[in-house]
Length: 119
Image (cartoon, rainbow, N blue to C red):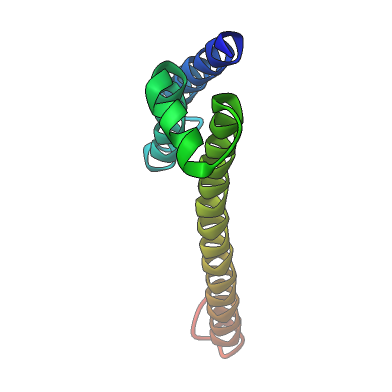
């Protein structure tokens, strides 16, 4: 179990560093990095607090702490992925609305040009 927890600790620290470097290089926006940092922090805390992990395993009714850790990590990352799906859907709707507005403006500009109002 200690090997799995050490690997999870390493992965969480690597994820935190990756997100921070990505924010610094402007590869990811700060508001989107918060979800990843929170998920990595949850993973880091759970991989270091054995007593809490054992309590969660008992609460969930699973055989061992490593299985509980994997269930929790999977759930946290599923929530992050859901949040980003909502954001992507919202951005797609905004892009469609923007494309429609541009098309309307082009139509009005073309009709004004045909009437001789714009050169």
